[in-house]
Each structure stands twice: as C-alpha cells, then as structure tokens.
Length: 79
Length: 171
Image 1 (tube, rainbow over the protein chains, first blue to last red):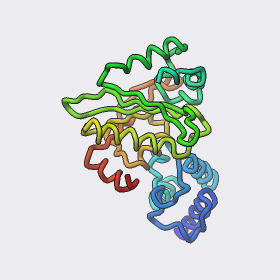
Image 2 (cartoon, helix red, strand yellow; image 1 turned 180 degrees about the horizontal axis):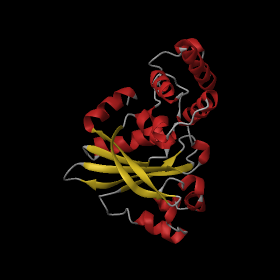
Image 3 (cartoon, chains in turn orange, brown; image 1 turned 90 degrees about the vertical axis):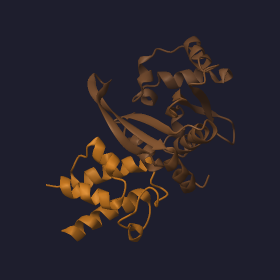
Image 4 (cartoon, each protein chain N blue to C red; image 1 turned 135 degrees about the vertical axis):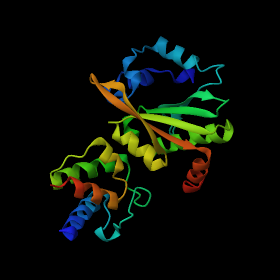
C-alpha cells in the first residue's frame, strides 16, 4: 500500500516536472527541482487530485513543498 | 516612472485575472488617477515604487512597491504586480522580490518585511514560501472575496533570514 502510494505520487511528479522517477527523493522540493515553479506546482496539484480523487484545501496546496509532505497530506486525505 | 503610466499599465489594473486577488481591483483607475498614484510616491520616504522591466528589451511588465516603511522600527511591507501574463510563473516574481528586498534591507537598512496574501491565492503563497518567507500570522476574514470573508496570511522575513536568502541566490 505504502509503496504503491509512493509510486503513484512519484509518477505524477515525474510527469509534471519532466524528470525521471528515480530523481524524486523524500526531500525533493522546489529548491532542488528546477522546473518546480508556481505554475508547475498547480499542475501537480490538479494531477494529484485527479490521480487520487481528492480535493486539497488552499493551505494543503501551500504546504506541499516537498515529496514527503505531499505523501503525508495525501495519506491523511485518502479515505 | 511617469512615462510608464500608459494604457498598457492601466489595462493591467482593469484585467480581472491580474487583479483577482488584489485589493486594487476595487479602485476604478483611469490614466489621470494612475498618474496621481504614481506622483504620490514623490517626496515620500515612506514608500517607493519601481517598474519591472525585461532586461533584454526594457519592456514594462509590472510594478513593485515598498511601502508602510517605518524607519523607527525598521519595518516595511512589499507588494508587486506582474501585469504581463506572459511573465507569470517565470522568474519575474523571484527577481522582483530579490531586487526589492536588496533595496529595502541593504540600501534602506530596514529590519523586517511583512508581506500579505489572500489565503486562496495559492500561487502567490507558493512563490513567497519558495523564496524563503515564513508564515507568521493569519488575519481571519481580513478581506472579502466574491462577497465571502477571506483570511489574509502574513509572511515575514527579517534581516538575518535575508542574509541566508542572499546566499541561496548567490547575490
């Protein structure tokens, strides 16, 4: 379950930021991934919402500043 | 700056998408009112207005203001508007913040910046957070958005944090 979740998140991030899945680590953030700007961030949010059929709050969207935080927020939001 | 008070500048302020999350959308600007706004910065040390231009062709794409400057407490606010939507999501916001903060912290020798955003303006909040601002306060129902109360989230940065930002961006 945990691995599957990680795999799905990384797949989305890889597609949005146009980087290989292997490059996405726990601390991957906008400081590390060059292409992670505000527009790409919103693209990622929409893609994650579609992938996991969830809707993030504004504050959650702003909190999603690295891979680990994204995973934590998703785990809390997936019923 | 007066020469940059153009129809293009005015049109930014009339563009609902540009001003969607800005209080300025409640103002009904025309060229004369805009000129008065720009002139209000003359001979006033408590606020500064700068145009944002593309280096390669001097195209005017937005403005930034350092305002509410209190030299006694060393505090200030900042606001910026990228009016040209072709420059949204690119480096204009970050470069604007860098130059504005450099002026305020290093030239004016101020101590702490306050920067507010509507809580639903997530792109702006992402940008300032990525830049290195800290979320420090939340003013419940500070503004109205489509008739409903909306919070204002206050982000701050002090001079010590600014030193770290300068290292991060190698300036």
